[in-house]
Length: 347
Ligand code: DAH
Image (cartoon, rainbow, N blue to C red; front, side):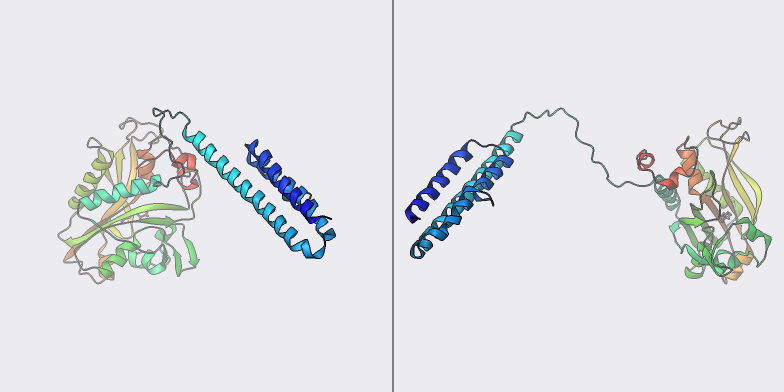
């Protein structure tokens, strides 16, 4: 086989390829055209098989010619693809833009959970009244959750709280935020004035109860603290959350760690007291538990209960959230975390 002839044919193929490329304006077609020359069944590849028939002395020159045409085709393909990309970009940029269109809403951006929104708002109110924020662990010992709070062993008061035990009688998931009272009194010097927000756990699970929910505990211990301070503090808080015209009432109650104890109701924010479904036709909504810190609790943490007194309160954040975002119907929605539901709230 005459080497000059192969070189001439290679040159032809190169030129032919470039000419065909001119007419192509799609990536797929450009790549297919390249394959028709350099691919396994391509024209250049077919020619390459003839190299065996070339006299050995000329094979090197012919081999170089193959490499050159291969390079030529590869280079031309790259240039064509680059040119195509640039013209597509240009076409995109030249599209008319309607500047009056509304911007695209970013999706999937994080936002605060409604419970967090309400919790932050409540904490802010107490901080504005001089309360500090304290916290404690969610896995508690029997001592902090019950014993130190004046729940004696086997006392029926422990039945009030359906406890999720980790080790029966020893460690548990805290059933309320009240253990933070004990931890704080043991840690901080008096006077103590704190709120402690956090998750609590009980064995409840029905449409009005979730096994995990959120409470905010309040505690103030100092010399000369009276029930009037408790009342004033809670009244200020309720008025800030629900409006100045909301009346509240203190109903005698019982908690082992407060004496006297009171539950606080607010006049139903939906019917203003005349009776409706929200308030079960009572005109009142129960909103929190409270009382004067029991002297036994103070003595337990080494505080002289003759000299110091204190008040405490605990409220359910879900309860406040349900009232603030009326019409939610079931507390469960707060914990299912369906993005369609969560997307309705803004801080
Ligand atoms: N820990 C109580 C509960 O979860 C709520 C409570 C009532 C907290 C009275 C208090 C209080 O600090 O004084 O049911």
